[in-house]
Image (cartoon, rainbow over all chains, first blue to last red; front, side):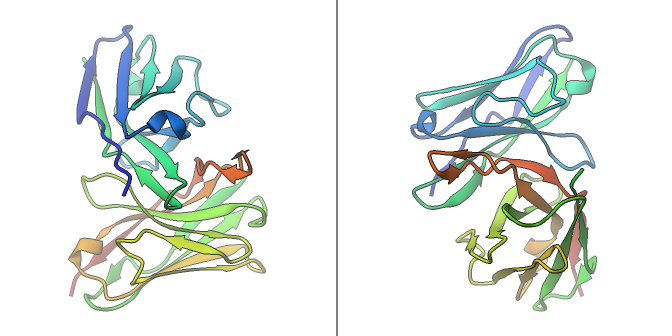
Length: 108
Length: 124
């Protein structure tokens, strides 16, 4: 089955740029989506189709996807961005939805 | 706007069947894929399966032998049944909607609307 690999944690100072990676075999050929989850809350879609932002998501959130790595970039990080972030794809070969293990973003 | 609400027992005994319903309000259940996703305490997200409004389904192979997802379009609801539960099935269960974006005639399965989640504990 298809596997997505994320770093368990990323730390960043306020105002700086955070980059969270999501690794998978030839992930560049798939559509990658990213979710933000704060404690006790349901996940929120922040990026879909590699780099599109849903309505209401700040422009500080962006995404890219190429080769074996997709990246969620958060610019000008704020304290409120502290959360768990999950990448997700739909694996067309198996018709299955796959989530990465999640990355805890800590704002220093 | 569209909202999802999970409902069902919060406590299920081992070996019994977990049953949850997701009610869709503010919009129609038609023309979308609907999924169940769970999250054990302190762990990551696990996709359980999806159902299309027409009734076609697909399940996570790790749960396939125990899972049934059904839809009732007249009630704007879809449901999850998970049989022979154990403590490992203790989790927050979410229902979610695919955002309907299609690329090259296939859905991309990005979940834009989620229920608030319901905690289900498996214990005697």
